[in-house]
Image (cartoon, rainbow, N blue to C red; front, top):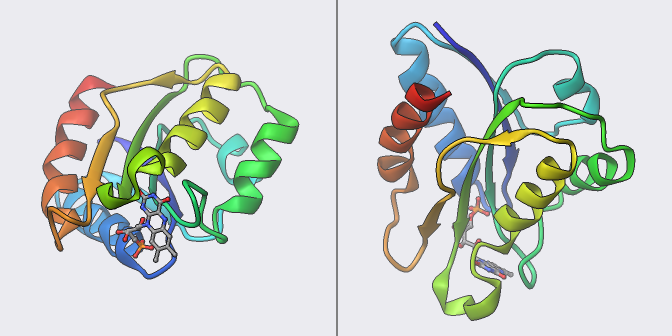
Length: 148
Ligand SMILES: Cc1cc2nc3c(=O)[nH]c(=O)nc-3n(C[C@H](O)[C@H](O)[C@H](O)COP(=O)(O)O)c2cc1C
């Protein structure tokens, strides 16, 4: 059994639905999943659980408004999390070109600055390719858990 915390960034609800689908699946398999819809830095420093970012991308490669305060505070405070496992699932749309899935890259950089340890390759889910991000995300998370 593993406990994980999911940091959600979502504008229209797709990334949030994805996080909830992950929670439902994993809890059915005996894991414990906390979905943080408006995370604060305290939510991560108060435990050692592996962290999973599940965010969409807005603006021009930007972090959604509900995740932005966490992102800015994380960069500002840089609470050191040496070796703490994290993974990134990011929703985007490849028609945005250079900013495709940019929010995932921003979160990755900030987490690296805290000395956390990335596990697995970032999962980039392209809205041009799928309307059901959870169909890609759930198997990815199962594999991610095995690598932690
Ligand atoms: C105003 C707006 C700006 C967007 N900007 C980007 C972007 O810069 N890069 C990208 O990859 N996707 C971008 N997207 C696409 C969204 O990230 C994508 O549709 C995603 O699935 C939305 O997830 P959500 O429902 O959780 O917000 C943008 C979408 C909108 C509506």
